Length: 182
Image (cartoon, rainbow, N blue to C red; front, side, top):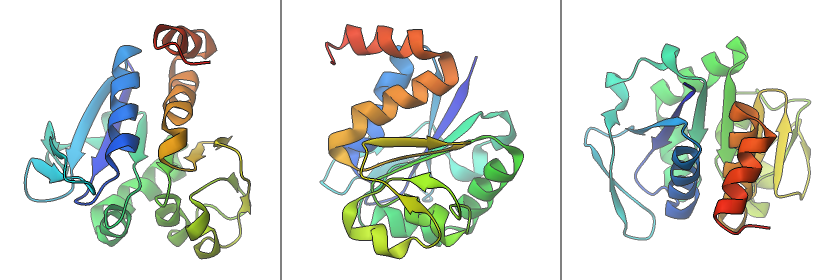
């Protein structure tokens, strides 16, 4: 069974995180919600608190196939400031495992230098913070093992792309159909 770790920092964008968790679980992909704080409860950018399964230090990331970084402010800067997050993202990238980021979160990848020469997409206001990438305005972009998306309005597209790369296009279509998504 495929395993995905969704990393949650205080100030995460709730729709981006929870849409991803929900649709991946509907596709029977194991999802571990991981708090990068010292508490299991993580506070969303819009006042929605989420109880995670694990704290960052409790997770064996070697068992995961993908790591997902939701955006949000101050969630994205909180992810970027966490040395463990930066290490895991870099390790996944170097090992050829999937790294997925939505909204402002691609800036974390950009700050690590792993977007150079990649086609990506992100929230428009952070485009100028990412150097060396070919930035598109499409809802979702997959380039090698990097998957990026623009924001809240593209969260379903993002989650379906993650399902597609992990479980195939038929599974992604099945989930899209089941939620009446065209």
